Image (cartoon, rainbow, N blue to C red):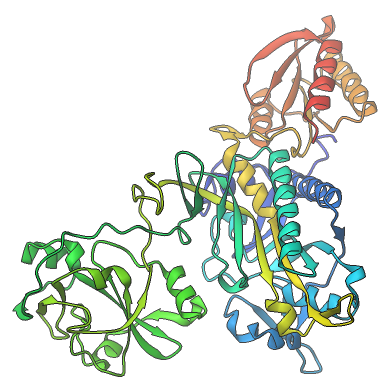
Length: 570
């Protein structure tokens, strides 16, 4: 492809709304353009990268026994209502109505769709196991689209579903896809970790996430130095370090002026934050719920969602008016003598701490020496706490280490959650109807583009790994008006094309500095520069990843490119 013909509108300055490296460079290099908040157009270079990742994923999925189909992005309301997720999925679902007043959604995921398809077609155990996948556009109306294509409202995703006879065979299918995903992300040359994930709204009995490490990733993973344990921050269990035991004392009400935070309260009373019960006042589906945890920790909302079995979007903080309706006062909420209509949830650690400090439900007052069972009760949850770096990993003597990353893949053991909801069964060898055991497996295609850039760049632009680069090589003709330079550039261009190398030639009549800046920005891996020594058949050869330049003959440069491509193609 000739750069003089390529639609590649590069930018010299960083876009004002670009928050992370991948967003900045993909915009500047002319790979994407923003159409609306969280919605992007992929320009020629960007779409070539997307298609390369799609094809790589296809090859691996096919190799591991999956079969590709394509379902519509529009899904009928009925199947979502049958599974119970039409309302539960929440405001992230794009909903629409056709001219006949029938309701549909733009698919955010496809568990119901695939289950319905198989329900109507697969009747016998002889048709199992079955593994189907698609690469399709997904839609989620993110409340705050951010980080460019990393968290957008429209994105490309590979989703696969397995159907099996029993839990054992579901586990086999799960591990088959686990290995397939390892191969995909190895081929993408990503630095990634596999961690235990939270099943969340997907349901099921277990899941793993594939996290591409990146300092700008919005997800946090907690792992051991030995590599024996890794989980998402939300999933990681905590082994809470309790304060020393004390003799139980008599309850007492104390004046605590302006101590509406744990920090202020701890300093005022000269007491450890561990003995201060932090109150989180929540409205959950129009019900008042107060959660109590140790004052030195943060609430893990995902663990609370799992404990209550509610959707995260149904949880919000109480307003001051709601708190006062509980016969309490903002900043001074406590479980002792609270309104009986309020649901109390207590982290288990508080049941083991003596002489707690709690809010007195009255402005500027707290109770000290409050103890669970004697003075208050509530539903006990084993673990509601957000893990912190340095915490001991339960069952080990290792401490958690933290890293940030981008979730590029996830796999779930769904069990019979969706087959039961949609009454999807097969007949076993005895003629008995059984529910399918299912697995669900997703790879973020466009999110993988962002992850690759986050791991491969320098101050000048993107450094694409050879296997996913939009083009493998670029020829820069310094002065296309010079006959020697133009002729040699064209000769190399034709030879590389004849060898099936994906090559660009920069034949634009622009200053050399502009061409070099564009070349660095778009990140093509293999580079030939045709300049003043073209008449001697000498060119400059370099790699984008290290920038080292050598002067060699055009034939040697071509041989170098052929060798690099042969070794580096995925």
